[in-house]
Length: 165
Image 1: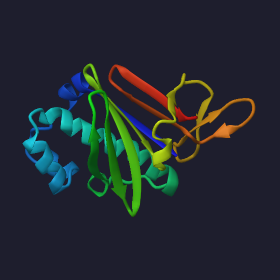
Image 2: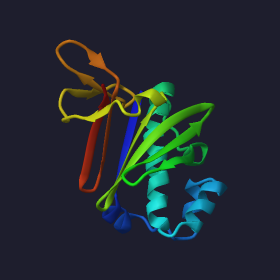
Image 3: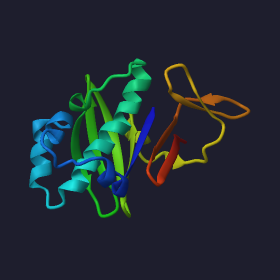
Image 4: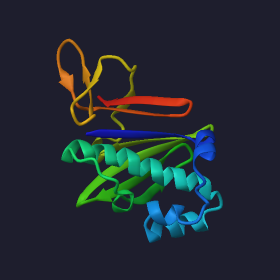
């Protein structure tokens, strides 16, 4: 399964004051908050963790068919920080979701998968042939089959549609 999230940093600066009192405590675990407060560029880490949580939540939602507001139950961990991407893990309810994040110009894009071996099997596709079920979960339809391995995310100037190959 797949999930993805994109954050437009410029849009986030207009919509969300992550430095206001209670913001970090509402969304992040104590350990995540500690990492954010120690980071030289905390704004990027705030939206990195948020993007990881959102991408993983899309898989969790697909699995459970439940819409819940549970940001602190989605626990982020950075595993690898390379020059052009960051790999991580998000745990929730006994599940581990594997993430890969690209820091873009004024944006962050995270993909999440339920199986680590799928982390490098994700491609961007055009937003066509997609429908949503009664739970709001997107599916990709072509002439031969219907696939649940698609995820849609948009924020501000960015839109990403990804699928597993």
